[in-house]
Amino acid sequence: IPAISAKMLSARLRGLEAKGVVARKVLPGSPPSVEYALTTLGREYVPAIQAIAEVGAKLKALARDRAS
Image (cartoon, rainbow, N blue to C red; front, top):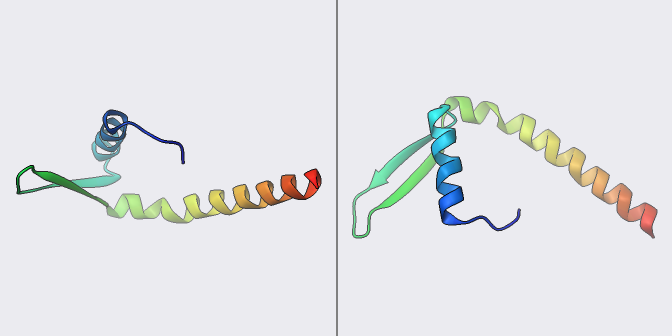
């Protein structure tokens, strides 16, 4: 995963929160911190993401084998 700025990460997480994929919880403290968790809807994405990652790994291995 490429590096991401804090501003961009925050924007992406806010977008996912607006779509109901993640839940945001502000924790008290100084400075305050934020915790994110997958919602029920977000957990439904996990099998699809795992399948995409598996195909990506297979394609990467295939490309590596062809290069050698």
